[in-house]
Structure formats: structure tokens, C-alpha cells
Amino acid sequence: MLDPKLLRQDLAATAAKLKHRGITLDVPRLQSLEEQRKALQTRLQDLQNDRNTRSKAIGQAKAKGENVEPLFQQLKELNDSLKLTEEQFTQIQTELNDLLARIPNLPHESVPIGKSEADNQVIRTWGEPRKFNFTPKDHIDLGEKLGMDFPAATKIAGARFVVLRGTLAKLQRALIQFMLDLHITEHGYQEIYVPYIANTDSLFGTGQLPNLKEDLFALSGDQNFYLIPTSEVSVINTIRDDILELDQLPLKYVCHSPCFRSEAGSYGKDTRGMIRNHQFEKVELLQIVHPDKSYEAHEEITRHAETVLQRLELPYRVVSLCTADLGFAAAKTYDLEVWLPSQNCYREISSCSNTEAFQSRRLKARYRDPQTGKPELVHTLNGSGLAVGRTLVALLENYQDEDGKIKIPSALKKYMTLDYLLPF
RNA sequence: GGAGAGAUGGCUGAGUGGUUGAAAGCGGCGGUCUUGAAAACCGUUGAGUCUUUACGGGCUCCGGGGGUUCGAAUCCCUCUCUCUCCGCCA
Image (cartoon, rainbow, N blue to C red):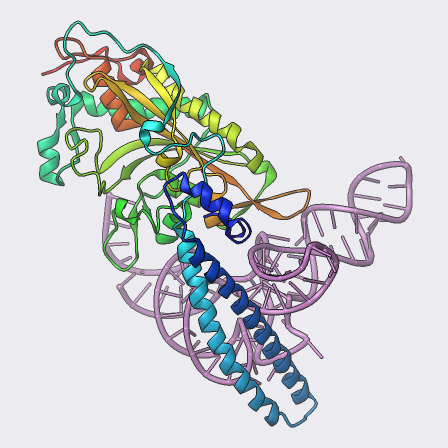
């Protein structure tokens, strides 16, 4: 959520920044709502003040044994107009809040301005795409002979799921272990295990609700539960409503979890294979930091995710998403894109974002400033380190040989204890 | 699933319709004393929000939501969560 003060004091400038994201603020409506809010709130509070002092007076009069009947009558009348004002105020406030809750974060000044993903900026490229002396197969063809079973998954659940068997399932597990160990022992993250189901407060806090409801799997029943689309939801919500001490910062968590996404609106995109599934494994990096440190942390978290690809010797590039391509909560995002030989292009495998105070404001997640003694909003960051399903895809495609064997990169040897995945 | 007990500030914990945003203790911060420290003593110490250039002032908040009342932490309804006992269970 944006700071409501921005919309009061700096509405024109804020609207201009959102324009770069392709968002048009209804400025006249916001202005009018804000004016009404202000007038109603002032009136309401005056009336409440009046009621409070008069009620206290009744208490005092009663204690002295005076006749309080006339006072009652006055207050009843006052209460009528108070009730009316309260209703009007609540209505305006709700309308304003609903509007505010749907406004995305403002892009950081360093974010390239653009109209579509075509305007994303390549920051750096690592590694050389391998030259094949045969036509490389895609992961679906390769996987078919390695234990990747889509028909079985379709029977169980439907499209956009996968069953993995044998060494391929083990390879996925090895990737998870490898990533966790790397981030824990070399990058200083604490491992954390969390629920994969979250309530509406949590999903509002990280920004999936109300705007991105369509992307979520909702559970039936009267509890308003959702499957998490990323462990970011669960991990970041551990600090909801908290006031942290300064010396607790930064908090750095690494979390492996499955992620569940409805992929509504992506019909026809990546329908085959493991690129875009309803359920996938992810190792996620989270940081909760002092506001002055968040851009430093953003570079760091990106480097941490890159390290995974470097150790696996997978060519990739880092892309700074332009204003039009930023996610709802992000002020700035670097995507990591890995080379996929079958598609002859780079594909997203990680997304590292600084949400600044956008999430923490929704969450009321704060730290105490020792100078002033006052609570201040923390900044939150998230980065995939990495999406495991897509890493598996990249591994198969980049490490294949002409016979469909897959070489295991040396970084994984300790977890796999074999040199090749062999087709059967 | 059955029976019962709870949810109050950073923590422990009192409060039961009226000057209670809340006793007391602990913790935190400031001070006195001391060469320094401890102890003791004194003071101070919740969050959010509105308004104001500021000083200040107001409003809201005692798990969430709703209700009764001139007035609710306190009474009623409801939901959530926690604890104890029984049953079931990976």
C-alpha cells in the first residue's frame, strides 16, 4: 500500500509515476473522496468528543446525586446525528481504502521507463550458451525418457501438473538441498518452514489480495483459506503487526515450499511441460531490512540468486524490469533469465524484488527507531533462489547429449552420487 | 468430536457499567548517590490516526466483528485463537 499521505499531499506527482506503470488514477474521484473524508472525520470526532464529555458529566452529576434526566434527552439527540455521521464516514473511508488497496507500488527512480516487457533492460549476462553439434531437444522430449510423466499427472489433477519418477525426482530434491545449503552456509540465511495455506489477512499483507485474487487457489469451506502462490506470503507474514528491535535487522530467511498458482489468464502460454505449472517447488530468499539498506539488500539478494546459476554453470542474464512490467508490490525487480537451448532464448527463472514499505505498511511490520523511540516501517525483499522446476528444465536442456543422457553438474554431485541421468 | 477455562500495554498481571488508556510488579529510558559499578531512591515509559507551521489538542484501540446503554476493558451475541481433561489420530 502506498502512503496515504502521498495521495493527499502529492496526488499529481503520484499519478504521474503510476502512469508509467500503465495505471491511470481517478484523480478527481480521489480528491473528492478525500475532501469528504476530511470533513466527515472532523465532524465525527467533534461529535464524539461532545458525547464523551457529556457522558462524563452525567457520571459526575450522578455521583453527586443530581437529577440527570434532562441531560439524557440532549444526548439522545446528539447520538442520532453521531450515528448518521459515523455511517457516512465509514462508507467514504471504506471506499477510499478499497481504492488505495488496489493501487500498485511506485517504481523506484532507477527503474527503466517502458511500455511493455520489450523495454526491460539487460543489466549483465553471465556464461556462454553452449554450441550444440546436434539439435537440442526440449525438456519434454528429454524428460519423457527420464521419468517425467505428464499423462499420469493429468489423470491425478489435470493439465499443468507433473509427475517425476526415479532419478529425476531425486534430481529435483538434490536441487532443493543444494540451494538451501548454499544460502544457509554461504549467504547467511536462516532456514524456515511455514504453512502452505494462508488466510486473507496474510494475502492482503503481501499484496496478493484484493487485486490478484484470480491467480490464487482458494480452498472451499468457510475459513477463507488459500494455497500460497509463493512462500513469501507465509514468511513475510511472520512479522505482521510486530515491532522489531533495530538489532534484529536484517532478518534473512530461506524457505523451500511448493507454490500454487491458478495461471488464470495465461491460457495458451507454455501449456506443455514444466515451465508453467499449477504446482512447483521454489526456494525463496526473504529479507526484512532497515529502510536505508533495502537497495543494498536488493543487489545482494540478486547476487545470491545468481550464485545458484553460476554454481550450476547455467548461462543467464539479469534484467531490470521496466515500469510497465513490475509486479504489483514491487518498487524494483531484477529478473534472472536462464538460457534454454530448445527455445533459443532466455527464460525467467528468478525474480528479485524490493517492495520497500509497500508490504510492511499493509502488514504493520515495523522496527523501533532508537533515536526517536518511534516505530518505523521496515522494508521487505524477496527473490527466488531459484524456481526449482524451471531449474530442472534448464539443467536437462543445457546438459543433454545426443543420446538424451544428462550430465550432472559438479555442484550437485554430492547430492546425486551419479554422473549422468540415463534415458530408459 | 465432547467438557471446561481463558485472550488486558514490551512481559507478568489487577480491574468489572461512570473523571480507567487502564493498578501493581518486571523490563526499558532519564536522574540522584558513587572514583566506577551494583544496590537503593526519584522520575519517565503503549499503538494508530486526525488537525496544526509549530506548541498543543482531539478521536480510536483492553483477541476480531456486531449489539445493549447517555456512558462498555467491564453486560449480550458471534467468530478466531490459546490452555486443561476425555476421545480419535500421522
